[in-house]
Every structure is written in C-alpha cells, then in structure tokens.
Amino acid sequence: MSVLIRNGHVIYGEDFEIVKADVLIEGNRIAKVAKGINEGADTVIDAKGRVVSPAFVNLHTHSPMGLFRGLADDLPLMDWLQNHIWPREAKLTREYTKVGAYLGALEMIKSGTGTFLDMYFFMDAVAEVVEESGLRGYLSYGMIDLGDPEKTEKELKEALRTMEFIEKLNSDRVQFVFGPHAPYTCSIALLKEVRRLASEHNKLITIHVSETMAEIGQITERYGKSPVVLLDDIGFLGRDVIIAHGVWLDSRDIQILARNGVTVAHNPGSNMKLASGVMPLQKLLNAGVNIGLGTDGAASNNNLDMLDEMKLAALLHKVHNLDPTVADAETVFRMATLNGAKALGINAGAIKEGYLADIAIIDFNQPHLRPVNNVISHLVYSANGNDVETTIVNGEILMLDGEILTLDEEKVIAEAERVSEKLA
Ligand SMILES: CSC[C@H]1O[C@@H](n2cnc3c(O)ncnc32)[C@H](O)[C@@H]1O
Ligand SMILES: [Zn+2]
Image 1 (tube, helix red, strand yellow):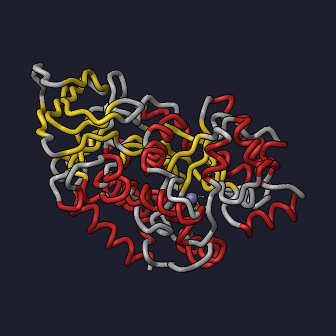
Image 2: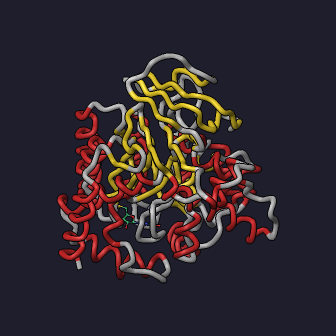
Image 3: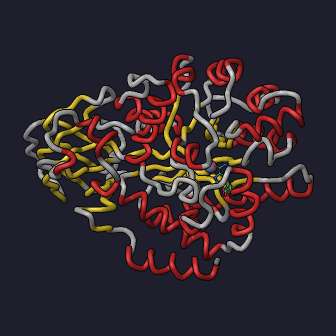
C-alpha cells in the first residue's frame, strides 16, 4: 500500500520546519518528503490548504471512560473516584467496556490522535478495538490491590493474562504495558513484582503518581516519604516508566525523575477540572525530564482532543507563572508528538523519511486558521479536533476527508447511548 499526500504545508522533521511539499508513504513508513513527487501511489490525497502534521500521541488516558462523560463533574479527585466513578465502574462488563473503547477510538481518530497509552479494565476487549480501529495502542490493565495479598495475586494474574492475549494478537500496533494504578492503591509487594515482571518481559510501566495534595498526605503518613522517593527507594523507577500527572513534586522528586529517565505524562485538562494543581512544567523541563501530553479519561476532561489539550497546557503554565513565554507553542506541540513517541520507544511523532506513517491532515481552509502566519501557533492556540480531516496510522487511512473508514461511526455512537442507559 502507498499513499501520496500532495501540496500540503508539511511540519517536517524533529525541528518542525514548515515546508510546502508532498509526502509519500510506502507500507507503514514515510518514504519521501519532497516537492513534486512523481511516483504513482494507490491513494492520492490533495492537501492544498491543509497542514500535514504528525498524528498526536495521547500519553495518558482511560479510553472507555467516555461512557461516564458528564456524570460526575465539579468534584475533587478522591470524591470523584470513590463516590462516583468506582461505583459505576463496578457495573462494567467486558461488553460495556468494549463499547466505551469503541467510542474512545472514534473520538481519537476524529481528532487526529494516532497513538495512545491506556489504563483500564477488560483490556483484552480494548485490544480488539485497537486492532479493528487501526490505532496504535499501548494498553495496561489497571491493577489495584489495596494491600490485600489475595488481590495482589489476582491482579498480577489478570495483567499477565492480558499480556498473553495481546502478544497472541501479534500486532505491531497493539502493545502491552504494566499498569499499577497508583502508590495509594497498590501495595509495595505489587509494585516490586511489577518492576520485576516489566524488566523480565521488556515492557513499559505506567502509573498515576503525585496527582493531588491528598495523595501526598496519604503516602507521607503511610511511608514517611513522598510517592516519588518511595518508588525510587524500592527500585521501581527507570527509563521504561511513564508517570501520569506528577503535579505535586518537590525539587528532590524532580531530580529523582531526571536521574532515572522517567517520563511524565502531563494532563492539564484533568488537573484543572479536578482542581488537582499545576504540574511544575518549567522545573521539570529545566531538569531534562521528558514530558508528554495526555487527556486523562473523558470523565475528567471531558474529551480526548489533543488539540484542545495543547492549548490548555500552554495557557495554564503561562497564567500560573505570570509569564507568557512559558510553554510556548513549539514546546507544547513537541510534548503532544515527539516526546510521547520517545517515551513509548517508537519512531513516530515527526514527518520525516523512515518515521512511522502516523499523520493527521488538518483543514486550514477556515477563517479561524487564516492567514497561515504560523502553523504551529495555529495548531496550539486556534485549532481543535474538529479541524482534523484525515488520520493515517501505520500507513493505513483511518479517516479520509472526515469519513471514518475502519469503524461504523453511527453504530459506535448508538451502542454508547444504549450502554450508558444500562449503566445509569
Ligand atoms: C484501574 S483502571 C484505571 C483507574 O483509574 C481511574 N482514574 C481515572 N482518572 C484518574 C485519575 O486522574 N487519577 C487516578 N485514577 C484515575 C479510573 O477510573 C480507573 O478506576
Ligand atoms: Zn488517569
């Protein structure tokens, strides 16, 4: 399969240079970026007046949670989780979760996301959805043992079962990740075993860390140290660890994250909506920590739109620092693309020869994106997911000119409505 994207404004390479050029995709890779490519292709896309961008990497989400969108707003994290979300999640079945995952996949394709790092339940069902949708999914079964040794064993067993299921799919787009939920819901025994298993099986780990002040209080009371120091002390941290949030970090925590090569998945929308706090972006960047961008679940955001998320990130850190130079458009765009891909160890997040062909084509023929004075600025400050016209992942076209090719859009939405009535 080959695809030729002609005449677009291409965001080229790791420096995001804007060039008017054609992009040739062969198989799952970008083969050539140049003016006036003459080679024929199976599909030719006219991108005149469009921007050819790397597809976005959503580095932290819970893709099926769109089912709960709008059902528990305006609450702090612990109240939101314990009294509203967990009781609803207790009613989830594999079937319902799969319906939620379809809804999440549809939303991501429509808004130009190509890759996502997920944590949830029934991840074998989510894996089937990823396979079918054409997305690139890094999937973790979220483990919670609350210090109960019987649960520790059960959770590890389910994680390993999920890993085997995903390995059997033998897909280069679907990968298993270990996902202990958080230091306040997981025992030390579970965390240590996850660390051992991840090293043994060469898998990534993702975990919520230092999200709220309440968490810092709980962990300090239980262990006499911060969540990051705790994880460091048990040898949990490493280049293969992606922590979600990292809002409440002191300078010692930041040095530990930098020393261990840990990536932080920043979720500004969720952090603002749950009033969790503001991640110390500038301090983390100064320390050399890799920062990606995530939406968190659609019940705390309340969507999976990475274009929205970039704007939230940029504005949040400017106002928090009372400094408009903080979180400039290019820094935030990098977080939403290359940095996420780097954390996952994939050659994606840039339009360049040899990179994976994960591309979003954005329609700039609209008043809010004209004149085309500054492409990256427009994407961060002016665009949103509805402006994405075409999404390509691994060289496969998932949405073309607004039409979803891999999923039945009407059916996905109708099923989500049906299941949401059952869960109410
Ligand atoms: C065990 S599967 C994942 C688990 O995480 C819950 N969740 C969703 N958003 C957050 C968040 O911001 N912090 C902590 N936990 C979160 C989700 O509802 C599932 O129970
Ligand atoms: Zn989360």
